[in-house]
Image (cartoon, rainbow, N blue to C red; front, side, top):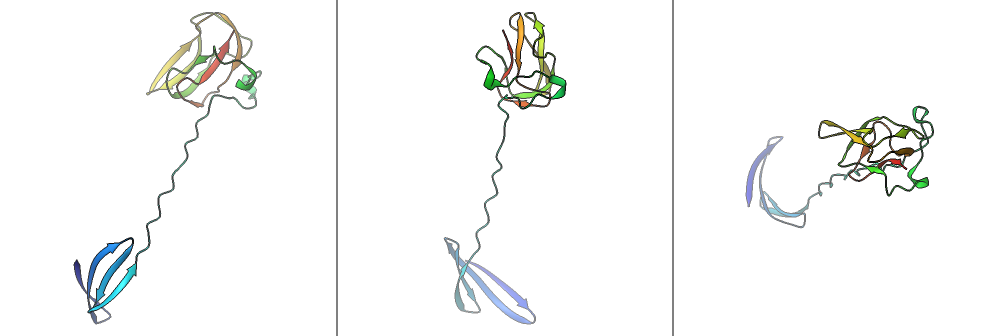
Length: 144
């Protein structure tokens, strides 16, 4: 039990706070007992994390011809090897690429990573744009 002495506007109060059970405190003020209901602290609001899944919206002017993942088979797409942010897209739909050509630059863990084509072919879809945050295994570019 905790005991306190207060003087408010010249009046003296002796306050004892007893057990607190389910937000009800047993409080004694100048020998008189009270059951005091304490307000519950509001739970902090949980923020939802929104992560883009690699599906491009309407094609921006600088990547005309961009295609969404809904229209393309992404099973053989170049995928993000780890979570990060796209800092540069070096190809556009229709470009011819060779194996080893850099398609996308991904910043992860404060390092720029050049993501290269695994095969030669034509870029069929660019599924991300600069500034997009991606998770590991997010499809980025489809080359066929």
